[in-house]
Amino acid sequence: MKSGDRALLMMGCPEVPVQMAAAIYLSLRLEKAGADVTVAGTDAALKLLKMTDPEGHYIKDTIELDQCIADIVEKKTDYNCCFAFMHNDAGVTYAATMSAISGAKMYAVIFGRNAEAVAELVDFPAEKIVAKAVHNPIPLKNKIDRVMG
Amino acid sequence: MSCVEEMKYNLYLERTGFKEAREYIKDNSDEVFYVSPGYKIFGDYYLIGVPPIAMGARGKELIFTYVKPCHGTFVMGIEAEEEIRRLREEDLKRPKAKSDKISQTAVASAASYRELWKK
Image (cartoon, rainbow over all chains, first blue to last red; front, side, top):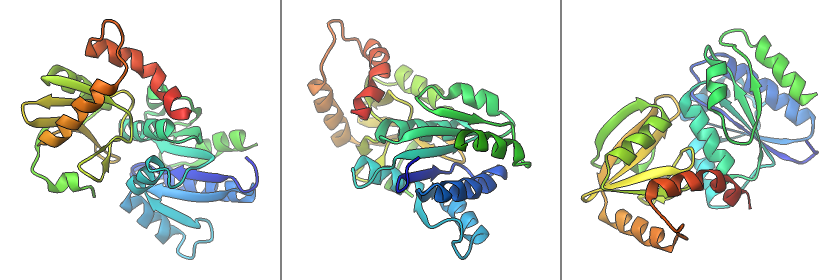
């Protein structure tokens, strides 16, 4: 990660609680490393994010998930790295799409009760960060810390 | 929300996995085409999917996958002769292998798609 790099955090369905904590934590880590961070998510995920961080201390830029995909396909923007959050098949599918359309280095952040099974679905080039975490975010935080150094 | 949800559609599979949806399209279409993630249909919908993404034509109906982050993959059908015509035209432009059966092409394309997009 170089200063000024553009990082995308791509959130999946917000039904698993650890995702929000991990996204905010990772955003802070990346900002401290000098990255410009954008968070993409569904309408519900972004509402949760904005209510969690109403004054934008941790999250500066957000974009609706499908708009983010459209902008990259249309070559209006791209990112240096992408942390794709996933705990289900649809999350893997979105991440595979991002891997195909973007030049970003991919990180697959995999959590939830079936984290290991979901990790096996990831067959595109990505560094996997896997933790069987649902309510307790610490196992996922520890895995993120290992990757972030 | 994409315009796709506002169109008149038939729903063939709901809340399934992407691979199961791809198999359904392969098995239930008169013609099958393979496109890359991000392929645009109906003016504003960019296909989400694990490459190769299958799209089917059955009569006048375009059969395709629609992915929602919280609900999984759906297989939808919408009458769309213009989109089917465009797929046929683009398929004709695609370089063909010697024995170019669609299913074989898909397998061959799977590994090369990502490299194609990374260039």
